Length: 325
Image (tube, rainbow, N blue to C red; front, side, top):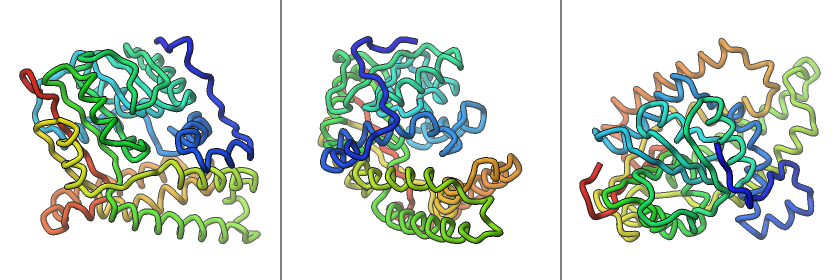
């Protein structure tokens, strides 16, 4: 596991002055918000590196790309967060070796730690997706999950992806919010947070309330979230952007409609109550519910609901040149 010696250190506890400055500086906001989240991010989003999330990551790749000769020799993840997408793809047989990058030093630190625990061959850099610090024609695969909507100039980032890909190499990005999906997800999340934090003020439910200091910190983070979430996407516009960047074999796919209507209130509730209240049985029940609703989305709703109404968008494309995967 290696990280560049000149990379900055994480800053997980931003001051009020730093938060105030970040409200006017989106890239500073990205760093502060994700450094703050890094050590708890996996727990917050129920991220793991076992069969459950390996299947999820591989499923997103297969849905976006379809059949492909695997594994890729070397892969890069942009906006890696804690390494969720690439590390699980590597475990799922998609890539042999990897590099992780993120604007947040805290996220790169956690991603490399996760890779080390898993015994995966991964290095890392603190890096801006608009200026990827790798040479031309370096990678066979560039991937990311829930990252494009944080990048100010998405088309520039896609051009950078194509630059560092070898001819015939592929990029795959998943977990991007559609414009319609983001609207209903935000509304459901805001309503759930308000109801949960108000109801748990009742004396007989006080055990279900997080300490006020934690709720206040979450509220400050939510203020930054409005700064770091820069885009939502119409699938057709995302395809046009990828083609304009120079990619071929471009395809956008969407997923999660009923699953998102269920999942966003559940995730918000979980963020508002103490962790010890969320038992293993509860978590497994929510996971089974998500699986069932995802099946319903894929096998029923996909046939009747326009793709732009689904919450998650995926985009893939290929660098022109050689035999394509």
